Image (cartoon, rainbow over all chains, first blue to last red; front, side, top):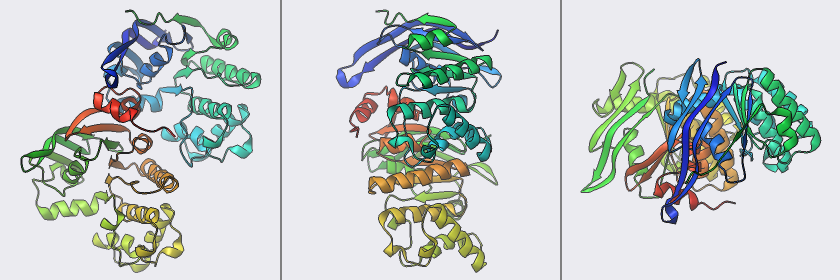
Amino acid sequence: MTAMIRVEALAKTYVVHTHGGTAIPVFADVDLEVTAGECLTLLGPSGAGKSTLLRCLYGNCKPNAGRIHIRHNGGEVDVTGADPRTVLDMRKRTMAYVSQFLRAIPRVAAVDVVAEPLRLIGTPIGEARARAEALLARLHIPERLWSLAPSTFSGGEQQRVNIARAFAAKHPILLLDEPTASLDAGNRAEVIRLIREAKADGCALVGIFHDDEVRQAVSTRDYPMKGKSS
Amino acid sequence: MHPLLEVISLARMFGTRAACRDISFTLWPGEVMGVVGESGSGKTTLLNCLSGRLEPSAGRVLYDTRTHGPTDIYAIGEPRRRLLMRTDWGIVHQNPRDGLRMAVSAGANVGERLMAVGARNYGAIRAQAAEWLAKVEIEAERLDDPPLTFSGGMLQRLQIARNLVNHPRLMFMDEPTGGLDVSVQARLLDVLRGLVTDLGLSAIIVTHDLAVARLLAHRLMVMRRGEIVETGLTDQVLDDPHHPYTQLLVSSVLQP
């Protein structure tokens, strides 16, 4: 099995200069591999660096040491040394990320927020919208909301728009930060189904799930985060 | 593929003071670069140097021309540089009055750009002007009105239409949303975002508004006292800033 993600000796320390250069170590010595069809769960108490690690994988956070090799366009790319243009291309074609919060764009309709990842890879608008609508329907977003900008939606609705967007383009790598945190049982079950379908399609997933039911339903393997080494 | 713009060790002095120095970066086709930093950090001077309007004191600006490939824009003569400005670049000024002709109609403001590159058919020019006004969400019935009768947000959108009608490959924008109220800003940002995605434009956007930078720019360059202190992917620079000045900038923003 080819590894989709290979993390080697990764370490992250935040240095807060506005606070006299205080160093806040987050994690060190993270080594892990994720292959296609697997869902790796990051485990650990709050503050162990789970979200920071996911953000590092997505190129949103810069580690201090170590390497992150991602399978991309038939080769392997190290996110930690890649230029912005390459990281953007990886996000376009290879990896999607569900953050805990949706950053809504003023005036853009929910259906277009979800369809955007497909539009970026050249899917015709009709097809992209159809797939977006199917996902919004599966996640029980009422049809009357599809043409509205999600900034006015409830927290749970925004999170479901966020999930639909991440699953829209069927990226080979999915990074999930608490995707079910504020969802009811019905929607939780739907997200579990979406994750299982992605796994069956050969997607490599890394997730943080505080909900034990979800974790047991989707996780292939756990990765315990030890947190800071100092 | 060549970079569209390559900037090598650029500096601009005003007397003995460097308004910007040691600026090097490349911009690729389709990329939007945000330049952020407090006022007086050299952002506008840099933009003027990059857009052929202010000769740098040192360094080079190479632009990938359609006919001759990468060309130092200050090594060619003024006429060729002027031609590039008309055919390849758009410049959006912070104050739309600096980029518009206030005495002629909105349609003429857009149409004269087409005439400057040889268009002569009145009907076709008028149709294209109307099409561009529609793209920036200005009603067709305002085509013959002078910009004097437009609101600030409309003027800014008209300036953008005037710049885009010739299909430039590179846009230079100086605080495009400065001085507009937030609902107007949102509309303008939405128009800009759509145009950048649909037309595959490259752009350099100077702004002090980090939210604008996050929405429009792929990459950020943080300037302080004329120098670049941090660069990177926009969300990475804003969410995990490393330089003390960037951290100060990010932590100083009021969250509504």
